[in-house]
Image (cartoon, rainbow, N blue to C red; front, top):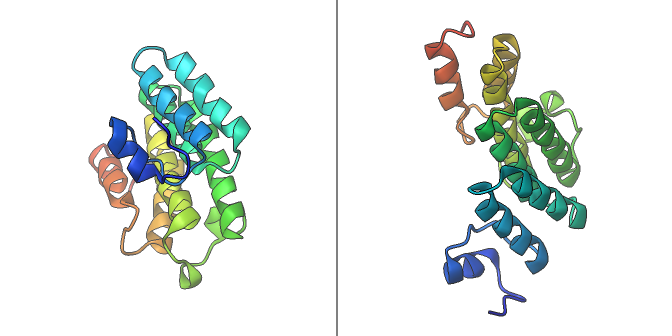
Length: 170
């Protein structure tokens, strides 16, 4: 089926695909294949997501897929590396400092690449918890709370997990 010129939602409705947003068809197709591969061959899924990034290094969805599959499979170093790279790219797209912890809540608009960066920072906190690094998780969660006091990216869920597991101290 021809998908040229259609947005991600239209493509997703056509074949139960994930809506990765408005991406070039070739990149979307690779991401869709990577998602399907993950269930069968995690290494092949990783290759697919990295291939999508090689074609379009600005594709935040590819970073998301990479950090998710690696976190799910327990490869926390790879998950952290993909998340950190995704935050740097999102910051570049938003015209911000690549170190998201230097951002000010005063001028943040929580959408697009900024939202992606903070959502991905939440993932970094989760990865830190899984690695047993409660101090790093706490630093990330505290900074997220300052930047996103209304919890638009859902960091409180990870914060609750941290408190429940007593890995970090409030």
